[in-house]
Length: 459
Image: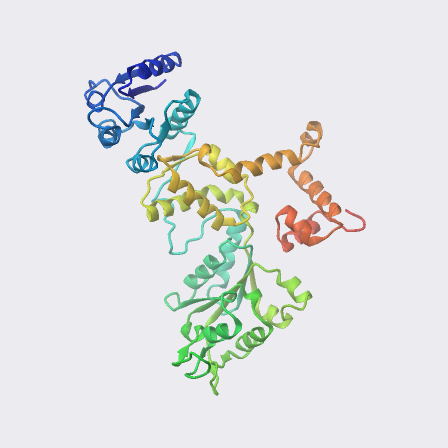
């Protein structure tokens, strides 16, 4: 068991806690002031320090940095009868691991100690976060060893030196711009400009000026001649993100660029040429958009000379441990934090969550956990509710299948039956089925084809 040092000027409270922890098998030391706690003999090596804030002489807040220095491996739980927001904030900033109000709820204190001891543990059931092993930063590094990612790496290598236009598809947050950067960096002119355009960020008139440039006086506010992104990307790459959001007029203008390698700035009489390599990306199902007459078929085929599809994170969960390590390494550097261990139970929970926001959502979730982390290890109790709530929901969804039936079914069999159930419940409405299953339309089409499902014959 552990050694616990209780520092409180309330002698009766100390005796009560001593009895409680001793019954649990802990070695308990008592002190009634900061000075007494610091003056214990050299055999004292507490794992946990329970430190009262308001005491005669030095306060617990004054002593907290001293205890952190004196007992370097100890975790500190502050206790106080005063419900003071500023004091709570100050205690956490000084390095306290938890903060509990008096009168002490023993169950709450036990939970805090158990959580703190888990955070302090250094065992083989945790994954170490190596800053050197995964130097992910804002320099656009792709992470993943799944077959899907290995296939993407191969395509990047094959297409990098080719001028062929590339269309990158995938859900929001999968890392489409990372793929575009990787193609550019692996190409013949890696030091040439890489220029990104968000096709959904500007209204049509401003987007045209942003992409192709404009002449002075071309429109209200055009006080000077301005180069467009196609001109800026000369000899390099122009990345057109969210290409599916282009208006019909802009689609026609882009088609001309791809066909003729020329464009006309707004207000100009003469055309300019470009040799920039075009890489486009979208999370829209362009095949469906073409069918719905929302996207030009000729432009679609011009864009997808080479198509790279990035599967969502839920379809490549084997990449998650590497991504977690890489993202935490990046977050530690950016936030000047030192979270370098993560419980394997946490990794398991993360791998079983669907991540509708993909890698972007994973990074934001880890960033929040690190910001609120009191120690150096991420444990299950620190996870947001969404990760545990979905696991409960998934378990409930198969509750109507008998254990004997499940024991005889493969994962593919279970998936197939669930897809059939959702399709039939929604009269084969693809949009509603995608929403319920949490998959894209292309993914649903692949699943229907994979399992030979048919609206009339079912399978």
